[in-house]
Amino acid sequence: MKKYILIADDSDVIRSIVEQTLRLYHYDNIITAIDGQDALGKAKENKNDIALYVFDVNMPKMDGISLVKEVRAFDSTTPIIMLTTETDKAKMMTARDNGATGWIIKPFQGDKFIRVVEMYLKP
Image 1 (cartoon, one colour):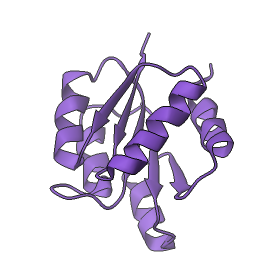
Image 2 (tube, one colour):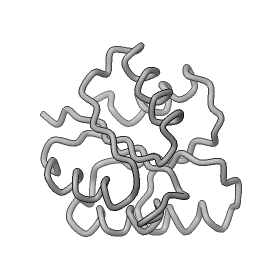
Image 3 (cartoon, helix red, strand yellow):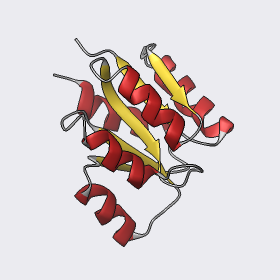
Image 4 (tube, helix red, strand yellow):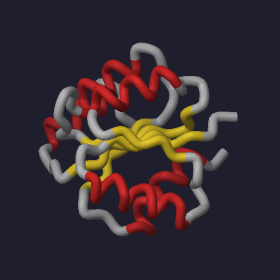
């Protein structure tokens, strides 16, 4: 069974908030990445064990939409939630067209974030 949630965000604060929110709801198997390149390496290393990806859109080294494309090249089914301050509909459509499955606008409320996570993780 896939067990990890991979979080990629260049903001230490956001990564920490996402991780703390997940742990509050007993999601303890978390991998964090500081940018898109870091996330891609960790996604490849753990590709058979990741149950959910949570990617920021705007990151250095590789943005979230490019990261979605790269991950989809070797993992076509694991859900990818985009976490961003972006409300640009065109960016949302581009992310979706490249394989993103969900979109959460920052700042978010923990319970709403968890509802989206559970929508993808519950059998």
